[in-house]
Amino acid sequence: MESAYASWFGQSVVLHVATGDLRVPMRGTIVGETDTALRFRIAENWDIDIFKTMVLAVEEDSLAKVIS
Image 1 (cartoon, rainbow, N blue to C red):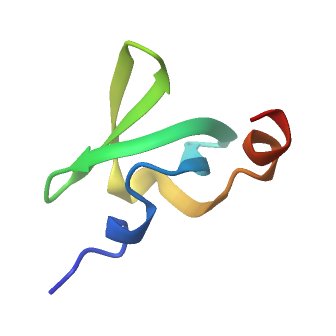
Image 2 (cartoon, rainbow, N blue to C red):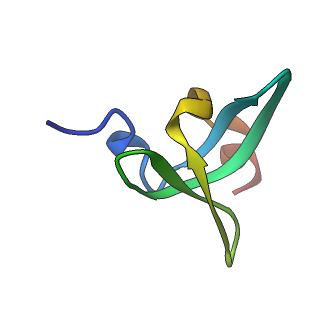
């Protein structure tokens, strides 16, 4: 079965993330995943792992289309 995130790989996205009472939109690219986490690139050489349980939503980064 294909992951719910697979169609977003390599695209500029806004990842809506929550931890505790904090909700943060993060711009970047999903570059990989494990069973429990997403590998998210927020800068050219800066990848972070975000637990899938923290992800509220993924949406296309419309600002990236305007800039490029």
